[in-house]
Length: 120
Image: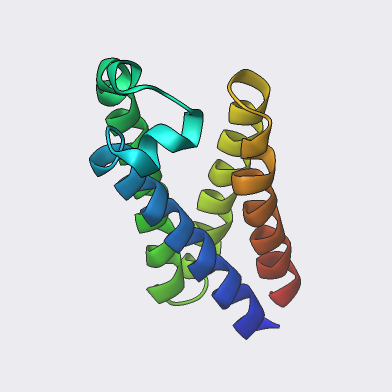
């Protein structure tokens, strides 16, 4: 089960690294604009906000990677902390921005968190 938990944590970290790239570097291009259906003008106007969000997603990814490489019990605790952050951010985003965030962010985080807790 520990291997499954580590794979899920790695996938959540990769997801947040992808979100970092999308929000920080591709926001004004087709992949970023397509995420919310923005026209070029709206994407340009919201790019600084998206870059800030992307940076936070990068911190989540970095924390999850730290949790994967750190020894027990630190790694376990770090994974739990950052996965809880992912779930809270996903729920908040679903309530305040777009319901899809619940399934794209909170659900993967919750599944990884459950796997981490069961594995220990």
